[in-house]
Length: 374
Image (cartoon, rainbow, N blue to C red; front, side):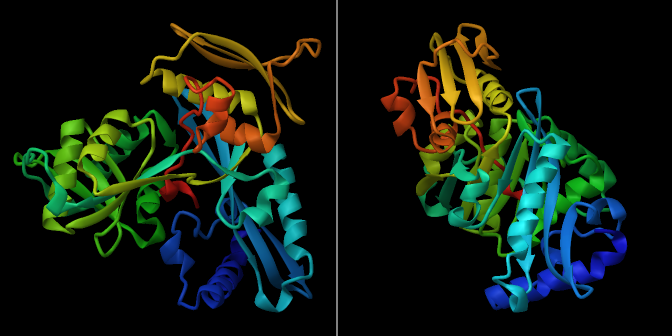
């Protein structure tokens, strides 16, 4: 699609999703990162017209990422929409098939999306990865009271603070690239959330967060130190909302250990559905990530993923790597369907890895920050 299709595309999505969820929808408010009237942003969408009218569309959004220093190209396939008057005519099947071809053309290593498993499973998507959600209650805070924190709204025109916040986000061990300040800020605003900078008593920035408009959910939080992280959480609970929901990625070990001590409860689930395209690249990157916070036992095994190939995984002291084997004569130690491979390598369930004697290595910390879901 092109920039001149902007109004028609946004109108189709607002109307269709508004009808589905029985509420007013505004994608310009929900996903400002997506809604730019340019050929480049509109060109990430495929549309289908009938008699000149746009009746179905979807987006393929490239999301270059870094995991433990490894460059990985993910892509969301999302905002899948068919006008209610045209449902059941096979239009979406045609578009999703075209989207799968586009993923191959762009060289994506993996893709992710939301939606029903039954709808996207046949295209290679399955719930996988791990996200931990904590439910915090100020009344149950039993730890030492941290130093006081002040929260200041982060505005688009605050370029110095915005640049510092973006630099902090981009320094993480598992990040999606937000290439400029507008892209970074729009990501914080996604799903109608609001960003804030956290300042210490000296007026220095110690981190930032983005939260729901009722203050009851922190959707993204970054800090310079774990102590700053604790201070920001207590400050938010004591100043803004005594009950808070907070999703976290599993590789943030110190933060997760602290949250396990102070939370009222927590849940573990897949953050979304993943389609793994280049298995060796994503397994290799997440192996390296896990090796930064957990000692991996010595292991050398060949895993065969149905319909893809054989992966050699080597771990041990100073070793954490996965390579794709070209020698077809080598026998696999463990054979996995792609559905089982997703769970085995990435979780959230540990049962399959434990049963196959690989629980010390797998599952790996594949996850997703949902502010980057598009």
